[in-house]
Length: 128
Image (cartoon, rainbow, N blue to C red; front, top):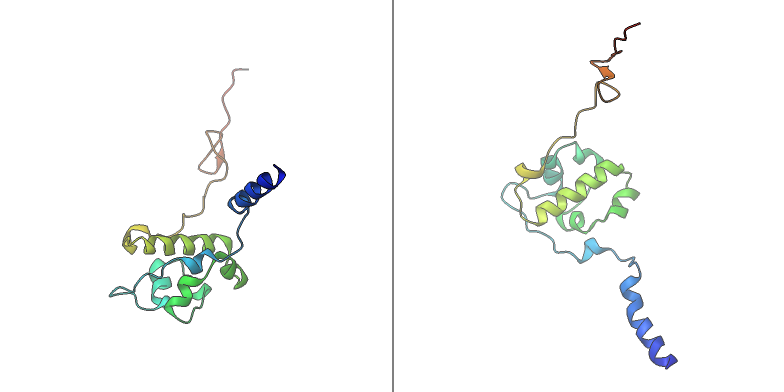
């Protein structure tokens, strides 16, 4: 009985264990299209000056990079997530014009709600 239980637990354990392999290396490399043939052109097309933040030699090396590789190369978290997100959208054959966008502008007014409007504190009028 214990042998049967042990073998069934051993069979289930890989399903619950986190794998440390590079899943980006297992995914397919998308073909280049007419306008984008190099990794630098892809990074320039997605915007946010990603071509200055990441330097990749060839097309296959770009698509084999993982988030950990981007982290080791010094790319910030927000840029890393954006690059990986754009790479996945490109793999799904979506046009670049649909998903590449600039970041949200910074808020000019701090706070929220009616207490602060246009940078000035709004105080309620009280009858005294």
